[in-house]
Image 1: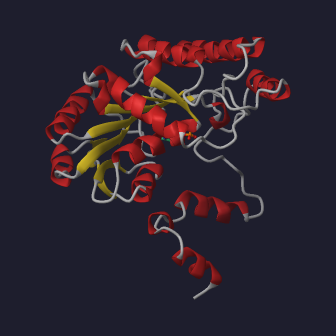
Image 2: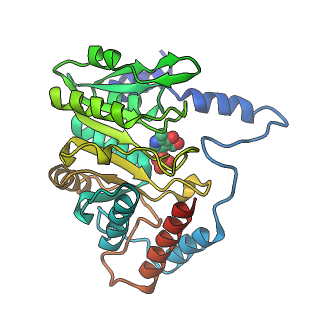
Length: 307
Ligand SMILES: Cc1ncc(COP(=O)(O)O)c(C=O)c1O
């Protein structure tokens, strides 16, 4: 047994059971090849816009590097709720919005809240690896349900989803528009999944971070329009745009009951050090900088709406 194996044997199997990402493996090989051109990891090669870098730098220099309210400041949550309202016509209260450190933190938190040993999650796939990994890390079983080929297109195979579900299914995970396939769910398919979730008393985790990457419509259909019971839906949402993952403003949006439970859990498990737009000062009075950050958020929002 190597030293690494010996250490791994002392760690939780849920964590050691998560394999290294094939994406990272391929990138590591490619980066070692002379002359290879980096096209980035699932992001644009455009640099983060100046005004965002400046806002982040000024925030740090102005001393806004301290803890804030774990859910984000009211102004930011207000702005995120307003964004959901303006894009999808669905009303969420700021108290139903929790800003997170990237969409990943929101996804992980939602999965951790629903899944434990003995539970399973149905993951519509091919899917971004974090979903299956987070279910495994939570001690649950991830059941990947492949999309069906329909000529040159992909479609949801409801029978496959139904066959994968049982009374231990706690979650259906759907990413639309999808990374990596670009598949987009239709409102009818959303209704069918919502019915299934209700039938099995499962929740839906709808990753809609690429909601604006649609070529023939202004916006992708959101589960928020379909599911009346907000406590049945988790939406990790992110303004992932302007070609910069570093410029993500992310939030987890859910109904009041689950949001309250989430806040309690997350405030006991504070994320790592963050110096970012979502980090709003709560121990200090609202400052010009907070106003500036809000202005940045609104500018980003306007940019996206123009797209
Ligand atoms: C579908 C999807 N969801 C979530 C994420 C993670 O987003 P973040 O970088 O904000 O954690 C990604 C990242 O590429 C993604 O492709």
